[in-house]
Length: 486
Image (cartoon, rainbow, N blue to C red; front, top):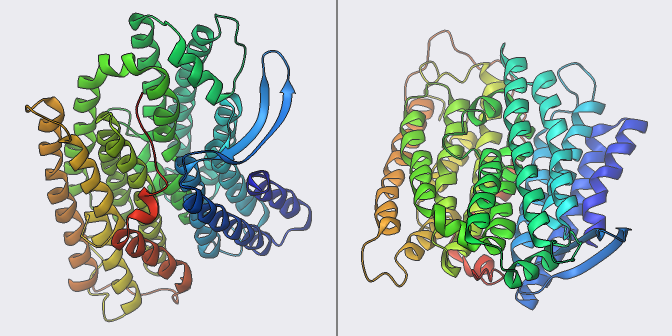
């Protein structure tokens, strides 16, 4: 069944290329995957999520052992669910045709981004985990460069290409070094579980772990927009078509965090210990520095892009706790943030379509004109701030609890957590100010609603309900996560 989930979007992309009817085929494929994804999540909920389920494997090479294998445990299953949910909603929000009047490339690209994310999260082989992620990046660049917004969309597309391309090269170098050290004893395999077991029994020196971990962490960090490698993210999300912003910020960006928890931390624990202090400093750069940058934004799309970068700092804090609560909270945060930022970009896209501007200094007083948008944006803003009752709050409070678990003295981790709490205040400042300005303030007299509201309501409601259900009942998520650091 995991094979089907990964290849349904790829098949849909081929069908769109042959027959056209892009949105109809994409909607059918995303609906099928949503059904499969929910079914698999329910199976994980029944089994507890500790073991990999629905595992399949097709041997590509015997030596080294290279397999096109898929399977999900609690963490990968949750991110698989996130991907199919956001894809389903992004397809509904997508226009029937691209700005050039054609529908093939637009919807093919959306399907390939989804397929790449699903393959990366569900792959049990390190080679294909990396390869599927690269598959998702190519259509992202095309979509921004061809269908993006703003006069500088081409330069933004090149910037994200260079940043993520270099990040992938750095990551590839680190993974090759890791593979070489783990297979020096004769085990030639790319299977992630076998490599993890080999790392546990391998006497790799602390010095080797230290430098290999740093290279892999920087590679994954660039893909996540870790400070100071974050400057590509906000312009890219602001320039991207709405569906691409939803898919990349909501789903694909989580690959870097997933890779750190799946690969770097369990295989190179001594390397993490050597760089924990640096990681704590960098994550505060995300939360505090980028938080102030977000406050300074006057464009809603750039504000949301920087907000997305800022909140990645909390996920890194959960990882840096190096305990079960922290890692589980980090994965929960990845899910909650993915849903909430997809919701915010969907609403932002609707505002852009209706007003032809996202300048916070021009927009105002829209609550009476677009009440549904005002209500749902309020829910999305409260979720992003971390209001109790939403999934974002449950995940963030889990991470903060993890930072103080078993602490007898105040160390750098606890000090970092106390400073990170101020990120909640910063989030409240920029989100509430934006909401007040857009929906309660006074608008530019020359600003009018230029188009009818074409935003479908069902995907917006679905995303809000997911945030509320998992916020009030966080154990629906946490019960399948059993990430125990070695």
